[in-house]
Amino acid sequence: MTEGSITKKLVFFAAPLFLGQLLQQLYNVVDSVVVGNVLGKESLAAVTTTGSLVFLMVGFITGLFMGNSVIVGKRYGAKDYAGLSIAVHTGITFSFIAGAALTLMGVFGAPVILRLMGTPDDVFPNSVLYLRIFFCGGFANVVYNASCGVFQAVGDSKRPLYYLIVSTIINTILDILFVKFLGFGIAGAAFATIIAQTVSAILAFTKLLRVDGPHRIELKKLKIDGDTLKKELAIGFPTGIQNSVIAIGNVVVQSNINAFGSTVMAGSGSYSKLEGFVFLPITCMSMALTTFVSQNLGAGLHDRVRAGARRGIAISVACAEIIGVIVFFFSPAFLHMFSQDPAVIKVGATQATTESLFYCLLSLNHCLAGILRGAGKTKIPMAVMLSSWCLLRITYITVIIHFIPKVNVIFWAYPLTWSVSAIIFVIYYFKANWIHNFDNEVATESR
Image 1 (cartoon, rainbow, N blue to C red):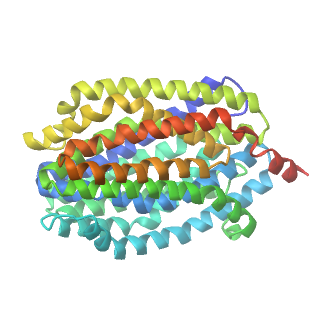
Image 2: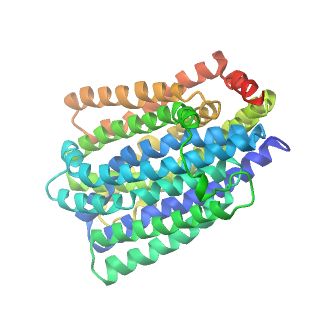
Image 3: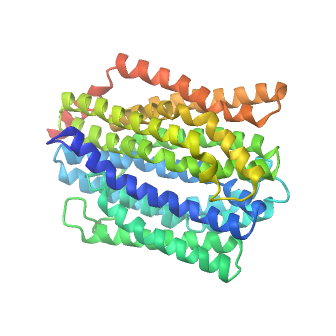
């Protein structure tokens, strides 16, 4: 990332991430497609309504490991391979602890949070069942993400793609087998997911044991270095909070959607699966920018960082808006994948036409957040998301829905909050001295 054509480096790094995220999204969508077409809209609502809760819990844990990726990337760019090894072993060891904690929180906390979300009685039992089985794979989920985070931090975005190809194939085959042919219902979809996640975690972790490079893991070195963990958490904790803040806002949004019944839940949930594909170029370029910025700031290449930031933003925003136009016109056809119910499709299409033309703002937000994370300034994205994507979003919905009790009011919460946060991010990007954040630390570590 510190040498050669900036555009080529960003695109070539982001391309495998895109394919991997595409497979990850297909991986998630398969459950909804199979469940929606085989078991019906109530079961589809049960699966799709859990998305916000899953992101709430998984997003916080995986957000913590963004700190590990930034530290690994910075030390890799600075050629501090001894420090890099310590960071890798610390991050992977911590993933074992965090994965176990996620499993326990998910299994025991799911019913409580689903009740707080106002999940309807006809959906609640299946939602609880799906989530409890899903979170039994929480350990594997965290270990996989931590392991792949190491590969991405050193510029290798291809290996995570290979593991996702394998796990997506497994998930798809088992989904169809368990749900359609063996009649396991929603439980079958959840079991298919955790089996596939476990396989991908084993593949990624095993490769780290054998890879030829400074990021190789040795079992005897798996321990936590207190100073390194402190640095990783200082960067990762705000990102975890940011993810949780977004999820909390989405949980509140989902609870308001739940009040409109299972048809609206299924329609909005189907759109959320479609929207997941829209996020792919956005999140992938954001991840590429985080790695690019961390490595180049580690190497002290400030001008290269600025140029990379500009090009990454331009590419991502353009792609997002092109996709937004496609979704605006063709969303009903896409939504047919999840349900044949005209009422469900109508709800999903309404949300799509409301939000799709504003995807450029969503892209701008994620790119700027990714740049700041790469610079170690993770508290800024956290603060922006807390104020805009959580507090403002919740306030808007709570107040306006009281006077205008229509689901369209909820859908407009997203473009509104994307606009506000984009303005804040742009002001900070141009006014703050974020690009020199690592200078003193790099100088200290090099002595």
